[in-house]
Length: 266
Ligand SMILES: C[S@@+](CC[C@H](N)C(=O)[O-])C[C@H]1O[C@@H](n2cnc3c(N)ncnc32)[C@H](O)[C@@H]1O
Image (cartoon, rainbow, N blue to C red; front, side):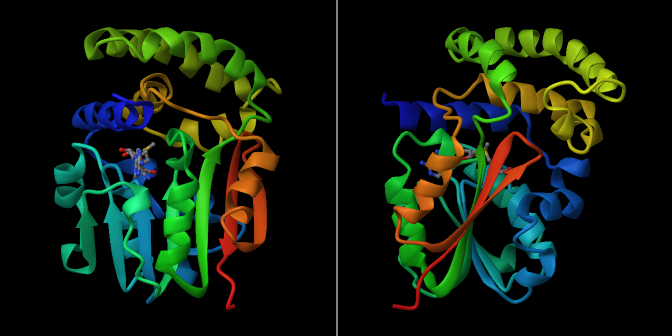
């Protein structure tokens, strides 16, 4: 099995364990944080939207709560059935069990979102091209990606660990997550007092997650076969190479990239 399909399988397993979107993890507060500073939730009102890589549907439900006219939700993994079940306004959602590059070329969408997905796809170029073809001229693609800058200590620890953890069966990985959970809680507490790496992420985001969602986030870092940490240059290039214009980038919480681009009118 190639890296792309192995990664999709890994997410199918992950979402069979972490099934819901409760609390801050699935909240409009977090949605506003993810899409800022380029958009606010009001911009989504009455828009035609797609999300590539919907997982268990938290972003789809956020888009619906923001007033989207309808949402096309793509999820290729075995989490597809769970996604369909978790959606709060099913009459406004088209769920498709396909990969990002298979997104139909609707040509009339106002926004395509892909949150935490493209860094798990070894060749994301066809996905960006499919998003381009699905948008109307003047429509926007917004992606959120893991960043390389701001993550050096984290990557020094996690990269070698991932070589092992992505091969572990679930029960061993879950055990490791449990062991790592308590040092993480301590680290978050220390961030209140010390200027530690990733503090800008720990306090406004991770501290507000429930214990279950913090465990999910550890699991999510250790389980998928493929994960790329983007430099600023590569993150911008991903959209500009895909013919998007007015590409803007934001270093979210000092550890990740939010990138938005617009499909030109001609
Ligand atoms: C980290 S999760 C993000 C889920 C959701 N966007 C969220 O923020 O909650 C990444 C998702 O991308 C999906 N995925 C992986 N490869 C994909 C591909 N080639 N096309 C579309 N989705 C993909 C996975 O199955 C997984 O559900």
